[in-house]
Amino acid sequence: MPTERNWAGNLVYRAREIAAPTSVDELSALITRERRVKVLGSRHSFNDIADTDGVLISLAALAGGAPGEPELDSDRGIVRVPGGMRYGELAPWLHERGRALANLASLPHISVAGAVATGTHGSGERIGSLATQVVAVELITGAGETLRLARGDADFDGAVVALGALGVVTALELETEPAYDVAQTVFEGVRWDDALAGFDALQAAGDSVSLFTTWQDANAIDQIWVKQRAGWGAASRTDMPDLSPFGGRPADGPRHPLPGIDPQPCTPQLGEPGPWFERLPHFRLAFTPSAGEELQSEYLVPRTDAVAAITALRALAPRIAPLLQVCEVRTVAADRLWLSMASGTDAVALHFTWRLDQRAVTALLPEIEAVLPETARPHWSKLFALGGELRARYPRWADFGCLRERCDPDGRFQNEFLERVGI
Image 1 (cartoon, one colour):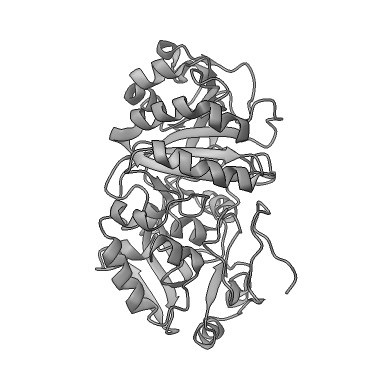
Image 2: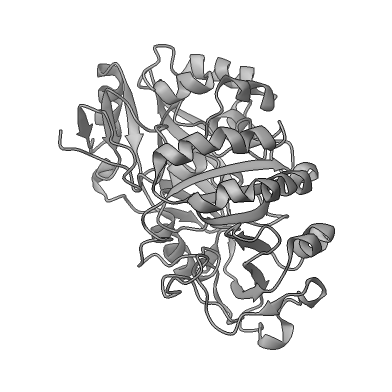
């Protein structure tokens, strides 16, 4: 097999082949024939969560489509999404039909099934992760059987954020709502002391509030991005958020989260309202997201531990800054999904975009994890050093293990990543 890498280029997949089944029957036969299989999505994982020494499965050709057409039930407001579809394809399709999702991640480039399975999130203290939009999941288990679990079923909360451990997700059903506009404004000039003293009020300044810092100055926040919903065409410069109580002033032009980078790849700012899918992500689909050459780590801590966690990072700033491109701090609402990083708690996400130096980043991560609260949960698809100790941070961990045994008794979806974290 030709060398296949992930998006960042820091991981070479070990699979002996990549298969692209064209039907569910062919997919089922492939799963039961092979000793080890995993699904290859948009390759935006920075660790080996999707790696295998067996066969990697692409869903691009499933059901004869690439990746197939969504199906919208307008009466229920539910959209059925093929497993291989990306948010950047789904969102405009929904918008054309007058529908929207409650939230999107920073990047529209990622696959829906992959983002859901790893607990990927957008931002907003009243908004859950992308997985909370799921009302039903369809997958092929390790026995080659089709399993559909819907919200309210006994195992549903364990089958949504499932790390690829239960089977191959062929489709998801998502809640939608009427399409809406969003205005995005970037602010500068806020200091950490003021932000932490009024953290709750700052996060309430918009539907989504992201704090960006390079940690070059442990006292300064470089930018704050505020996204707020608006009625159709109703937003204007006169009703933009007011961050002056924190020392914030609106930026005098478009900004990129990374200082000094051309902002053209970023979604429109300056308080200009526009369709939800063109404002909720930080980056436009047509461009390579962020800097293009990077590694990523992220830890979610309970909202009650956020100030302590950020204070600890401030003290570690001299160690972090030389390897860092940018750090983003934002909020995620609590959910009930067993392996979600926000399971059972409103959370604050601490995201690190690193320079492409895996050896140095890998050496630094244990230092970061040592100063964070023991409640910190790493993002499943990004770089982290924690292993078996994660078991104690998820109350339903043992229940998930039982569900995995039922869905994949022969361990076809097992890999080194799952073994390392103790699943």
